[in-house]
Length: 569
Ligand SMILES: *Cc1c(COP(=O)(O)O)cnc(C)c1O
Image (cartoon, rainbow, N blue to C red; front, side):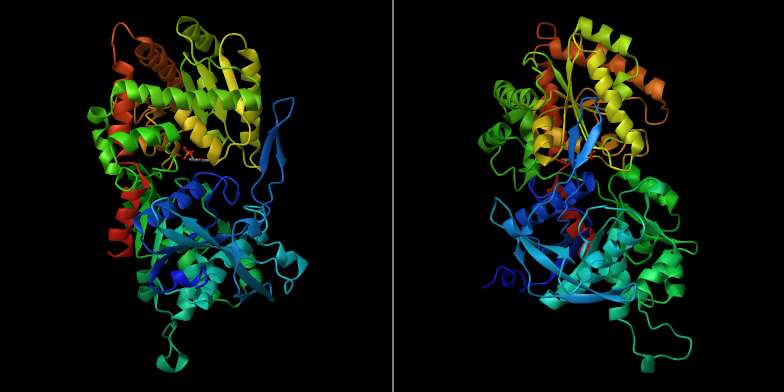
């Protein structure tokens, strides 16, 4: 039996995502959206919930980040070779873009669960001899450029993806769009299920919207208007031509431009945001739509460092399949064993920091970790708003900071932030140990979330739809100090799972920085160093993060909810 055939005997949920983080060596992801897609499939593999993922092959990857002598991000190519990880598929499908036939094939990557299950992942590829040079490059670069090629990528993903699934013999019971990039799949389904002209009375539409909506669900990730993909109708017409009548595109995707989020909303019966707060924001942004909330979760085995895995295997066996068991972590895991496992993870991070940056960190001094896409709303500079105050805090009780994150190549603000962080590293040298690990990826992420003592997140509300790195930290017994936005609104129990920066309502750069400094100075660092005054105080918060956050903010709870509410419901 070919590897593909073993996946064709039962109906599956098709999960469409522009990016997917399969493993560190396969750079088909840019950040949180791709990691979530990977965790979704990993959870489905653990739970043996039949799915098939559809994404782009992105042979050119995203980019590799180097930091030059002036502290600036330099982008280097990050190609990968699909042959090394996946098998080519024999099927080919065609679509018409700019009046040319574009052939699409794909690669089969088999995502294997350590628990035995597996899921197929199709990586779409237009690099075929039949295509002209320009079309061969459509699927080359993840988020390569805006405008025409982006629309073509989305056409290949949505339209090509649906056609390839059919050509390969998959029976699809439900289509799940992870973000709006793949929403053209709904238009392809409208075409496929259209009534024949002779069945219609005059003026009747051939398209069966209720039927297609019943087949589709949509997860939105973008809490700001500017974040939604939009395409000019002129461009849509030029690229897609008569794929579907323009009047229909306007009716479903917006009168002034094709808004992919709006299109997905109109074509999906079930719609959700990725945290409760984010669902509320989305309902305000798109009044009239029923937006559910399924708060994100992270994959237990992937995001738990080896020493912590061994600890849970010993004291809470079965936690990988049933992470709810971690709810007992506060009572069933001896504090000394937890501290020892954490010390091992911390040592691994210290070695990595030394190897990648030359900076020697101290094992007895707390490490604050901060890593995410470097962009203005994530505010990586908030911790550095007042360097004098930061130095004063550190003079009393010292701490060290490890940073990582890439800025999108076209995000000049994000790139400036990276430069600024490197200036701070120089300015604070000798007082606060600071290190920036270049080329943030899944591997660095795991080392960071497990080896830090405190996980920091300081976005500008309500911009953080969910955020997931704090959940990964919780799986490693690392508490968060974060702004109340995204998942932390649900996850924060003050002093029990970590600490909040600011109130849920009032925020501002200076006000938030002051609260951040106050919390660090008066609450967090005294507790960390409080061996004499509050013995066991810090380890209790570590246990609280595992018991109350990891037991809930995991991909298995998320997938069980999608299965019962979005796929079956
Ligand atoms: C988890 C992860 C992210 C997302 O983290 P956020 O907290 O949601 O910003 C981004 N990039 C990598 C490599 C990750 O592992």
